[in-house]
Image 1: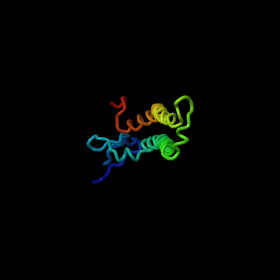
Image 2: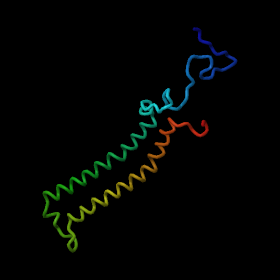
Image 3: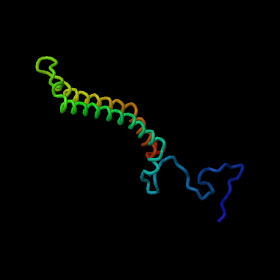
Image 4: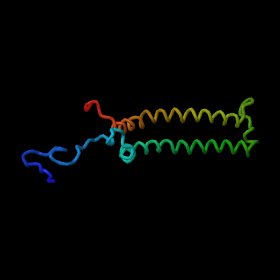
Length: 136
């Protein structure tokens, strides 16, 4: 078969007189479902993964170091952990209580980080597969 060439006076539009499918910016497969392979390699998705890792990795490592320190001190530094701070409250009890405070603080920090940094990036990734209201 012969492929039609666009004329000079009339610019070609995608799909006009060619055997190519019109291009669209949505990453969907032939069945209209999201093309997850294409989404995973898109720059927006990779940026989302980097942003998640930027928070999760340091927060996890710091909390695990803090927790392991608490466990090791509890196991091997009993005298230090029994050191009274005020009244019947000692270092071990205070560090145990601070584990809960740290967990709450990390949860609140992640919620804030997610709202400010991750949610806008998720919207960009979602826009790769959902038609905008202008197109619908």
